[in-house]
Figure 1: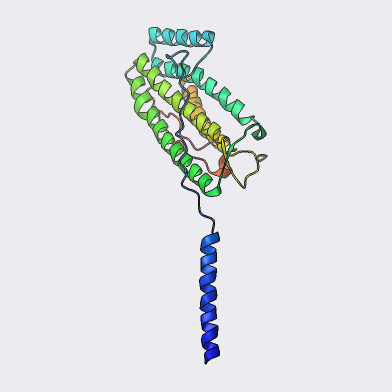
Figure 2: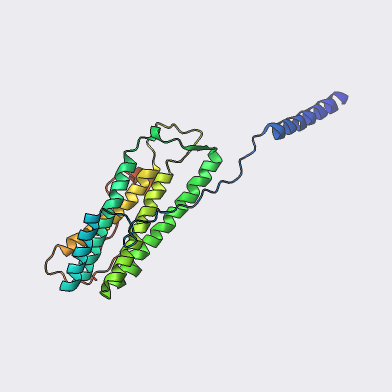
Length: 250
């Protein structure tokens, strides 16, 4: 009987010791990580556009806009919008092209613990989802009525808002190169910039649909910008974009 009690107390004692040892040696999780907000770079060289362009390109764009507005042919507001979109999105496309060919070995990212990197990814995921909702609304509730009302200044303002969102998405992709976790290799091809590029290609597809509609010399409008920008799955990032709705006839 005494032997049984001894074994029981010994077992309880070992459990208590193991619990104390585990509590003392257990790795404490790092504090939650909240990255700084993404901010698109403002255009300080020419506030008339959302991006800085060479003088000749900027002047050619403005001359074309003025020519379309003065001629006032049927559908001219949409041609103004396309002219402004094409000119500015070409600048953002060049930025994306440079980002996508930047070797990961050239970046020296901040190494976060796994839990902190998970926090970072969650924050950035929700930020981009919110931005896509805003970008869709900018086409529907800002550019569409600006074209309907035939107001060149409002069209320019709406396009600038759209381009600024695209620049924010570029900055989001660039930010993905600044952080990594302790288990990732610096030689791996980063996914984040390609996610951002996939989103930007959705915008380019929508603008291409607008361009196709305006290829008809008899086009008079109106158009309804129906947009469904989405966050791609990991396996989708390098595939052609086919899931965004363009600008069908109203």
